Amino acid sequence: MSYGGYGGGYGGGYGGGGGGGGYGGGGGGGGWGGDKMDNLGGGLRNIDWTSTKLEHFEKNFYIEDKRVSARSDREIEEFRRAKEMKVQGRGVPRPVTSFDELGFPDYIMTTIAAQGFAAPTPIQCQAWPMALSGRDLVAIAQTGSGKTISFALPAMLHINAQPLLAPGDGPIALILAPTRELAVQIQQECTKFGSNSRIRNTAIYGGAPKGPQIRDLQRGVEIVIATPGRLIDMLETQKTNLRRITYLVMDEADRMLDMGFEPQIRKIVSQIRPDRQTLMFSATWPKDVQKLANDFLRDFIQVNIGSMELTANHNIAQIVEVCSDFEKRSKLIKHLDQISQENAKVLIFVGTKRVADDITKYLRQDGWPALAIHGDKEQRERDWVLGEFKAGRSPILIATDVASRGLALASRLFIDIDHTFFLFSSCSVPRLLFSYHATAICLIQTSRTLATSSTMTSPTTVKTTFTVSVALGAPA
Image (tube, rainbow, N blue to C red):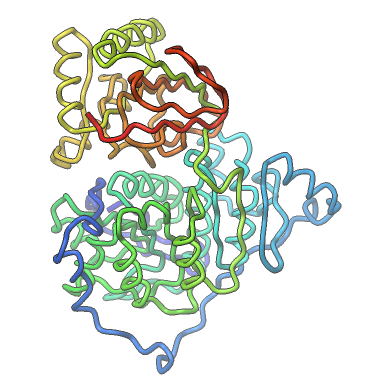
């Protein structure tokens, strides 16, 4: 568990005991597991919210800065156009252009300054005023756009405006995430920005021991970051409850639906008071995500940054190299030789766990400091591998799709070998700082289909800054 002590205002948390809440785990179950997953939540009773008296809670904390109010409609329109920002809904607040226009309290501004952030990212410029206004929100933005603190910082203000937790209370804020890795990343940001006001959190996910997670919940935490399957397990065994939840976030909603979590999400939301504030963040806006938003959000406002489809991150130079299968390893070594001169990190994507282990063994035998991460690794080993990579002690990481989206791994070079995703969408490159620049290389076989906006007549190297989709078929 990561936490602080007493919060501002009413003070969201009351501090206390140590503990180790969580390093990130698995999808928590849902979507992959047949009958067992289908029955998840079967032990939860339905709540009749119409006959339940709900205590009033505060959720509107936004006061528009005079500088924001003074801007003309034309200036606002030009700012949104420059940031590729589109908004929908009734009474959408104006965007801000700097941190000090938001009126964040000192305990948040101090942390922002310590992180060295120069200015809000486009999604933050618009999502913060929306979320702080207490409105239900849909935010569509590419991975790597700063979405996590778009919902984490308003959560801190929301929590600190609520009465303190009493013994037996569940959390005030719930953040649902598709994978354990993303849950851990979110937890780290919540810890970073919540520590000054002593807001406690824990991450609840599958693939890790339940004991520490249960202890965190029983001690009391203001924020729970959870994968759906493990959270339902905790609810069914009455290790926590959602009666105090007034701030609900669904992060990477599109991926949660892709993984089959919709029944679990619906069961979880049924346990939360209907007048909560709900925020949904997604990289895309397909029909199933739209239906989920219409079912769970009330009178919501929406911001889209860029395209509502998965698109290329323009901070990343995209290179496609068409080659035969037996050439891939020699080309891989060529790129590693080049990047090693810069003492930079390299993240290599592969299609299967077997290939990840094979390439790791091949590189280590050749003297390269490489480690692998995939779903068959124990959680402790996965945490250690990520730590070694982030610290630079093992600057080459080979990963399957477990690391393909949602991981904040700042690397200089990304190499995708025979991967099954549409490779140049944002789901193929981990979350980066918005201003970070890197290179992504894809090695594909000449016999497979390459679709770009230009015609390719022979095997070649394609450098592009537009969206490229690569149809690969089944992984090798």
